[in-house]
Image (cartoon, rainbow, N blue to C red; front, side):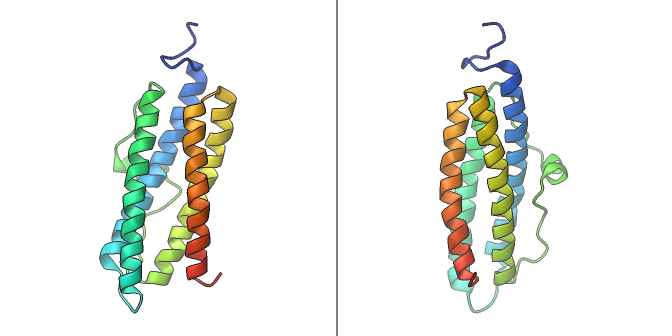
Length: 158
């Protein structure tokens, strides 16, 4: 019992999960800020449609950022809060093209691909650790985001 944390999970496995969740947090945070940039700066004939979609997306990402950070805390670790670390560790990079709606949607699809892959890794890690809380969270996110990928892809005619 001495190798278990406060919620009954193996301490070493919880630490590994927290590290991977911090990586997910970094990617979500850069994705969120990019999406804010698209929302603020979008131009063109699809402005009204995309402006609203980007707001929907960044509001959803903000909720997920908080949930991931709280999950890290639940596992007994500290969520990273520094953008300098986010930029260093995130596979999603800061967007420089924020006015072109089609490019923004392509970037969003790329970000989802990265996020979903990380969440699938977390599914495996959390299953191995017997961590139903993280597993359920990741499963819910993946299901929801797969639908978003389909919808954004349809917007691009893919």
